[in-house]
Image (cartoon, rainbow, N blue to C red; front, side, top):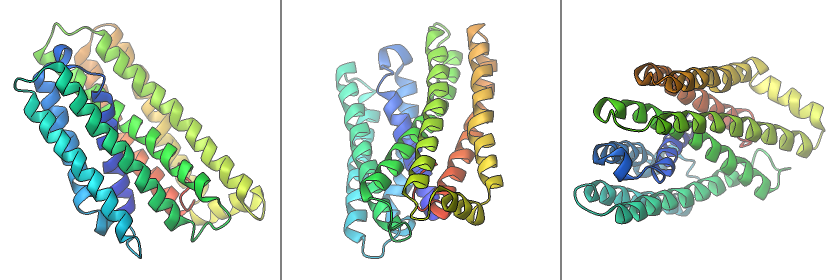
Length: 280
């Protein structure tokens, strides 16, 4: 469970940071930038400084230190971004947030490599590159889901203090959330196909092992909570935004954020417990 918590927080921080790269202060206002910076900073702080406790540490201390180093650098850039909201230009702020998000992306690459190495012990038939790609792409799409739904909710709140904000920002945020769900479906399919193709005893044995360890019922819950229900919320939030009902749209995005977080934690748990790193 510690790895699950670590991944969920890292993904949330990166997803929010990535989307903030496309939201300039001139449009959203300084208050929105500060709020995002605080949320990302806090989400990134815990997994960065407690990585040694949350990640497997048997012989991987150097890799964990590398993960922590990139996390610390990203935290410094987010702090600088928060300070820059006082008087720096949009251009300076843009490069600060892009630099922070880039460092988090590199951190995610090192995390994927570390976890692939660990999971190869229980999944020896899998090529390290394939396993690392499954973890990285799966984490990337999870980050996109977590970040897009959280940022959409925050954008919805912005209309309370900035009623002149164009409605297209909220509608586009809902569309980005919907796209992230579709991307997640693709990466889940890829992970299952990869596991079935690389199983030394054939696809049937792979599915049997998966059913024994986790049960298809648990994956059905993951699909319902993490894919189907969020898509329903996404459609409702977009339709509310389309008729300029920002409060209704924001209210819908609140439970959407909760179910997405629960779904991604369950997906990470299945990946660790049942699929030995194949990310769903």
